[in-house]
Image (cartoon, rainbow, N blue to C red):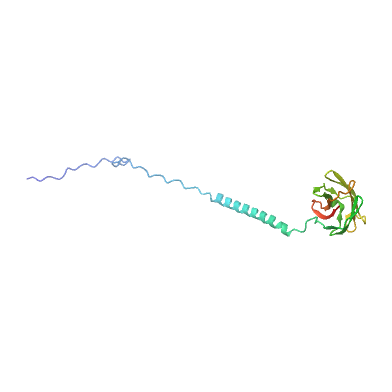
Length: 192
């Protein structure tokens, strides 16, 4: 029996040099490119944080300033005086009374006067030696006497209120001395 001989020798594949031979699935595919790196704007983030911190600091400083500025300030520039008026003397059409005390002697131009008849209030008028206060439809004369002529409302000065015609029977009157902001600083009541 004859033995089979060695397998036939196959010649090696020819070498073409370039490109190398492909595998069974075709040419190799390059791997995917990695995604581009994320851009981080560290500088922008730092700037935004600094701006926010500065803005918050300014706002808090402003709030604190306005909250305590009233506490550390001095007295108001024009503190209101307190004026006490004496008893009323009625004589004919006139009601007369004096300034018993004034906590501060202040210029007449800082005061207004007004009159209340029952529940009807007049229109405030500047304090001058003579003026008229209209209450309802009635005109009441108000005369001021500066005892020492210093142009200040102080102790010893006086007022005369003149009724139009006659005083109303059973009516309640209130004379008011008002400060520049029309806040009352003195008053006197009487009933007829």
